[in-house]
Image (cartoon, rainbow, N blue to C red):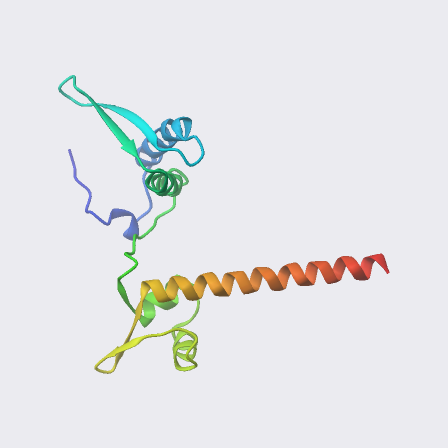
Length: 154
């Protein structure tokens, strides 16, 4: 059996077999998820043993999200919250240019550390900034939609 490298989907898209495997596992897991309850599964091991497994709600939700990505044919990269990212990696995650990210850092929109001449951004800080940015955008769009509805009523 050919073994894929550990971070396989960061560099390539899932193949059809992986998509089908992920979709099957996602359906099985989804059938067992009941709100915020733990998920109890039984795994059949190769030597005719049954192994009970209990997943905490957060773990089940994370696994479901990962399986959704693979079953939809999307690649992904797992980033630990405590990882330090280069400015290019951070810019890619925000879907902005590297010069724009540098401006954000220089304007203290997000904290960073310098290692020699190089800036490093903690993933946790990047994710916090992204959440704040996305919330502000969503609020602004909601406000515009409300204003648009008001002008239609006049």
